[in-house]
Length: 266
Ligand SMILES: [Zn+2]
Ligand SMILES: [Zn+2]
Image (cartoon, rainbow, N blue to C red; front, top):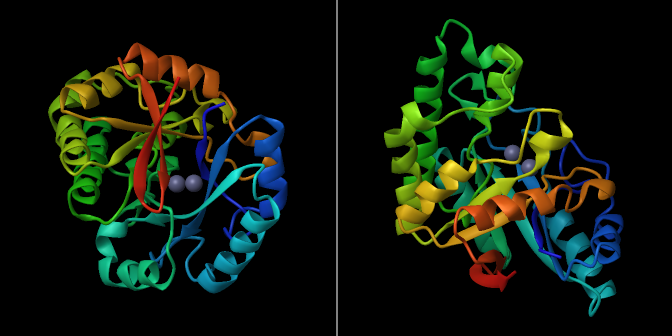
């Protein structure tokens, strides 16, 4: 079973899951490694703003790791929203503990939330997508992160506003390639996020087409993330995601340990 590199626990504002329950779910699925990546939201607009307690998360997860030693490798991580906009604060946070992995995520573009129909308020489809990809490129190029998480998260807004479960990125190939090139050139990883499937919003993403562009741009590292907020969702739809990664020509999945990439062959 491939490691899940994107999982939330009760140290995230939107999860009640105990870290141990999450890790036991990983063990039950035969997963050798799991990354616990709680939300760090420095954006005032976000529901999670001010919630994260780094010292509490660190101590609890170190204890959890020690208790489960030998049964599953527990990696301690963070999911930071818009990390390119909060570089000094993130840098201070990261210097406090030896984290294993940092996910860089777009949850907001200015005052627009990427997960709801409101994102497109006053915007045509193409205008909204261009705005989103521009912000994503800035994150990819400038931020301190290991994995670019849910690079097609704008699908949630598209689903709610237009009702489409899939997006053809062909008209946006150039701005999407700008993002993928930055991830590839900086030696970062691209995440295939499976949460769309559980939300009834279509297949894991990004699509095979986007994953192929990533390879063509020199991308080497791909991670799988369930984005689970409950133990029962750990590793959900990884079979489907793995088939997509393989179809795009990749032969390994990456996992981060102490912020360094390791390849897990499949
Ligand atoms: Zn996210
Ligand atoms: Zn997440």
